[in-house]
Amino acid sequence: MKKTNKLTIVNLLILLIILFSGFSVFIGCGPENEQPSIDTIADQTVVANTTKTVEIYVTDTDDGDTHTVSAFSENTDIATVTTITNPVDLTSAAELIIEGVAEGSTIVRVSVTDDSGQDNATAEQVFEVTVRGETYYDYIVGPWLWMIAPGGHIDVDNLSETSDGVITETQIAQKGVNEGNHFDTLQWTSGHLLPTTVCGIFLCSSDNVINVVREIGLTNSYQLTQYSAYALIDIFSPRAQNDVLMGVGSDDSVKVWLNGSVVYINDAERRTTGIQNRFSVNLEAGNNLLFVKVCNHGSWGGNDDWGLFFKIYLDSEDYTTSLPVGDNNSWHPVLPEPLPEPEEPIQPEEPEPEEPPMIPEESFPITISEIMYGSEAWFSPPQWIELSNTGTDPVNMTGWKLTIQNVDSEDLTGPVNGTIVFRDEFWGEAPQIWPNETLLIVADEDNANSGGFLEDQIFALTWRGGLKIGLWDTFLSAEGFYIKLTDKNGNLVDEAGNYDGSQTLWDLPYGFNRGKIREGNRTSLLRRYANSVALDGRKKGSWVSAVDANLTEDQKTYYGDKDDISSPGILGPKTGE
Image (cartoon, rainbow, N blue to C red; front, side, top):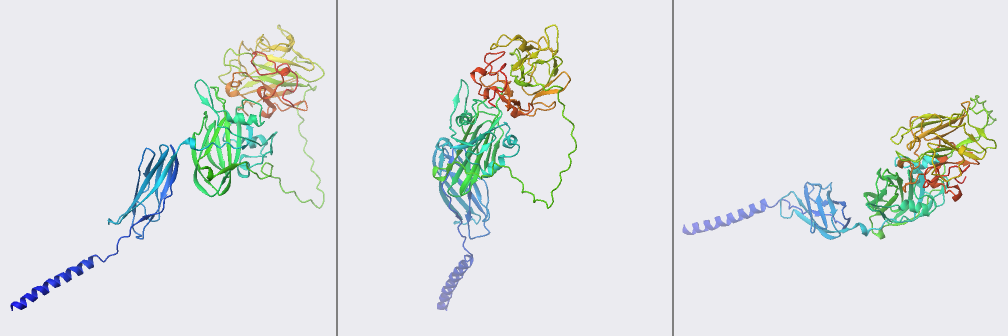
């Protein structure tokens, strides 16, 4: 019996061991958790004081797991990193925002943890972040292809307006243009955009746009207010590159196209000395056409600078630049297909008779040839309007009228609207304009003039004409005006100006600064002529500012201020036509 009991106890112990081992196997027989992994993260380059987004993709054979991604920078004085998206599954990516703080390099550690709670639930990866300063990247100097057009509004197609729709900004942005192609009277011309600045007593700015367009012969002027400059360049990328950072600085507003699409626009009024804004684009493999428009507004503070800076934040081996090669049809209008010839000639319909235009009883060769509207708001030198007689006979102005309508503005100190009547009166007889001579209608007589004006060539409104102009009055608004000259029978002889009675149709040159250029000189408006015939005085293209007219020395005269840029008393075309 005792022996039997001993065996029973041993057998019982063996049985318990077997049962315990089996239970252990049973509870541990479930599938083992698979460790997640992180797809390879390439080393990153960031510009100081900018951010960059990096996507993190997680791989895990446990399809149902969700994951939490975390990251940190080993040196936050160089770059910081923030995780945006959590948790993530296998169909989505976590986003890291890397911000460059200062030049240098740091390591970023990324870890991912699944939701199993087991020991092998975490994976880690590291990558390097290099932060480069603004000066590491070169400005895009070019050469670029350049063109200018009147008009300083970023949301107006100034190419289309100048060419009556023949050429548009969209056409150039999509198809490009070749060096030497014509636009209006100018040619698309190559020139380098130098990153230069000029500093005064208080402020620094850049005038590199006006410098380059002068250097390549698009203008002779040192200032072009209310103008737009267009620049094209080709960017060659050896491969497709996404989220490429570009930078621009402008004086004033700027618009950027890439491969025909607008990628950035800023309707700013500002100075510039370098990059002010950054934006991201995608570069295609091969050629990418970059088209930039920068407008010069001018301002009351005297800022008439015109500048542009541009950068691409890539290493030099990642892109090159060159002059674009455009579609040869991009600057020509699209002509309709010719109609097939009819089997029988079609007889033209008789046109309905039109009302004959109002013409004077006599054909008077009198034109409004020059206008000085630039003045201070108070105590200004006299403004004036010049009439020219290019005919062979003298013209007596008795009964003639000169009507003035103005945009009502704070500049005006004289009558806003009124009519000057030429007639005999106490102060003198009605004026007479002799052949090949001029008549100067002035706000007030002024001894400050270049001389050579005869007494009967000056008609002073202070005393005559019925408009009741006072001493130093400003009677032509720098914002806009309309002038109409009629003969003694009320027939229209000539008209001029940018105002139609309800709105301004175009901006007066330097009107934003009361008709004065940056240096403070007044500059008159000169009438343009074709074959000695005055162009339509209501159109912007019929006038040119005297500062832009390349006057010869014997054409430079003044009435009111010796520093005026003008040509009163000089007969006929003064603009080179």
